[in-house]
Length: 112
DNA sequence: TCAGTGACGCACA
DNA sequence: CTGTGCGCCACTG
Image 1 (cartoon, rainbow, N blue to C red):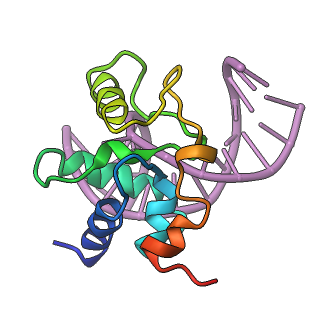
Image 2: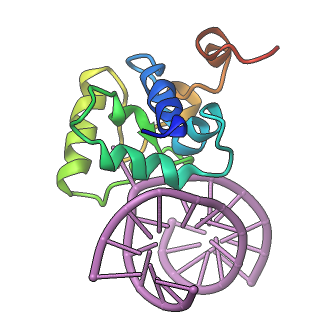
């Protein structure tokens, strides 16, 4: 298992319930800036393998990455709503549920 | 080795 | 709002 993969797992696991983060944010937090695609790749490869909150990872614009109506899409929407995340038209307001305010400093230890 | 294909992201028209 | 293009890189045939 690669170190980068472990970092990705750790970053995803750090997202609290009821909140979301983008693939890019996770990649950056895992020390892999610009490699958002790798996050998606890893989550796909290890889907079901580890009990990760993969549903809390979205595209940078707040959209669900899966094709609308697909199996994964419905599952992700279901899980997010179950956590109180407001999903409208397959998209979430990162403004309200993203890690972009002050919460990322608390949980991810970002500098001031 | 090369080319195609993604659970991405961003700039631009 | 919709596309298109390019950067990114692991994986696969």
